[in-house]
Image (tube, rainbow, N blue to C red; front, side):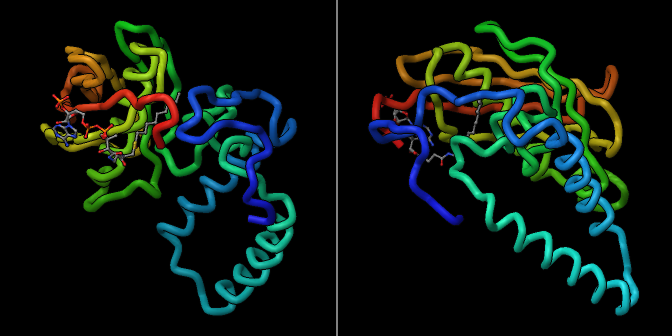
Amino acid sequence: MSDSSPTVPHEGGFRPDLDISTERGGPHYAEFSEQVRTLMDKARFACPTDELAVEAIAVLSELNAKLDAHLVDEWTTPAGTRVDLPARGNLTLPPYEIEEATPEGVLATVWFRPYHLGGNGVTHGGQVAVAFDDLGGMASLVAVNGVCRTAYLKVNYRSLTPLNTRLTIRTWVERREGRKLFVAGTLHDGDRLCADIESLFIELRPGQA
Ligand SMILES: CCCCCCCCCC(=O)SCCNC(=O)CCNC(=O)[C@H](O)C(C)(C)COP(=O)(O)OP(=O)(O)OC[C@H]1O[C@@H](n2cnc3c(N)ncnc32)[C@H](O)[C@@H]1OP(=O)(O)O
């Protein structure tokens, strides 16, 4: 990062509020983000000639050097705060669209892209866990109106999770004991259950990281 100091003052700990935006990064940020994801898809499956690899290195190095001049801190990067984009614009998450997020739970559509391949044409189990972690965190956050961290996340893989398919993911707080939030969740391909979770999220104390 060119400047790691926060641009928004705060008092330490995990910030309770995300500085959300639909404009940060400019009007073409969505397309930029999609191109980066597409690059990941291509990189996962491409077997370039050496000539093409050398060309790609030159193009990507030049682009990375340009982006170096525009790095910001995690609280203001569009990748994570652009709520109009899949998965808040966070490129490291499987893309999802929120249908509903209430204290009763979160309902979203998630899809795994070619770069989320595990093996034999289906989704990597770790990527399924990433989706549950983020949306389990969201269900906890909305339920208590405060930031929570995952203490444990058990994923039961019930059947194969396809790539390139719109899937239904649900997460909800099943039970609360003080700061402990027991979160359940399911991932479906149509009527077929792909995975479900048993997890514990802990509501952070004020100032806790
Ligand atoms: C819209 C935006 C949405 C954003 C969503 C983003 C979600 C992303 C979620 C994440 O990925 S967070 C990253 C992964 N998690 C971590 O890195 C957490 C690392 N661990 C910790 O920071 C601490 O261990 C933790 C905050 C989870 C708990 O520490 P605390 O000091 O706050 O609590 P403490 O250890 O006193 O435990 C509180 C209670 O939980 C229980 N507990 C804690 N960890 C447990 C565990 N692993 N298993 C069972 N119980 C556990 C503990 O026994 C205790 O129970 P009792 O109150 O009944 O005594």
